[in-house]
Image 1 (tube, rainbow, N blue to C red):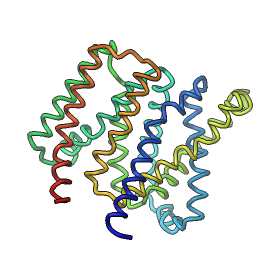
Image 2: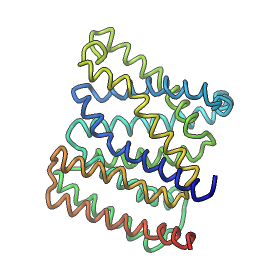
Image 3: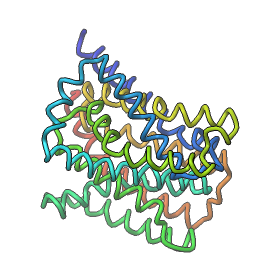
Image 4: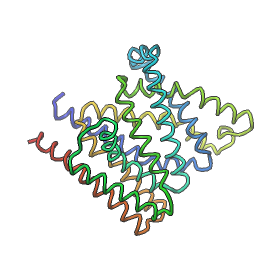
Amino acid sequence: MTSQKHTLNGASAAILAYLLWGLFPIYWKQLHGIAATELIAHRVVWSLVFVATLVCFTGAWAELKPALTSPRKLGLHLASGTLLSVNWLTYVWGVNHDRVLETSLGYFLVPLCNIAMGRFLLHERLHARQWWAIALAVGGVALQFRGVGGVPWVALIITVSWALYGYLRKQSPLGSLPGLTLETALLAPVAGAYLIFLAAHGGGALGHASSWQQAGVLSAGIVTAVPLLLFASGARRLPLGTLGVLQYIVPSIGFLIGAFVYREPLTPMRLVSFTSIWIALVIYSSGHLRALTSKAA
């Protein structure tokens, strides 16, 4: 395979993954009426079933097996899995409580949170451009206080949990598939026990929700794993800077869905807030774009 075709295939896989993630609000809205905690429990259990099956048929077991006897890797993935479940829970709750715009804000802020983490956790030096980006983002979040009449906690939890999840996953040598398998395996006992508890007390979506919603719940594993695997395929073929620019596809689609499909209120104050954050992202991304352009030249 030529280098150009290799890169094109990677870009196609990554863009498709981001498009699928961007459309997630529509999927979760179809399951409105089912508690977010139950949806995430199903997501954990059925994701484990799906990815464990893939592990058996792709040879990823050889990579996963040593991690099962490593206390450090188990602890690391228990922590990352917990952060992932917090991120999932907050996102689904936000979507089904008409806060799609706020969830998109959370993912817009992730790269800027990564910059701040690099400075304060890893003691990385920041350029003036990056400080300006952080300042604009902080200002944008402050404007959200007035725009939504309070702390945009959905956005902040999504931002921090996803940024910390990415930080912890970088500490692990496991790839996307075995890593997700280990994370869901560690969370599955709690998720499974919760679903059994609901069923034993006459609750739960299975057997009670509409046929369409039950099918949606059971497909949560595939819905979760497919974009992750596409992203992993793209990430292996693309420069990190390219992925950094493409990642804005997800919150951009979420913003459009929240504003124009579900007609969530976009007040002037909120629009100014988003604009401030978009400018911050342009400042942040300009360095990556220049680097990519110079490499291409």
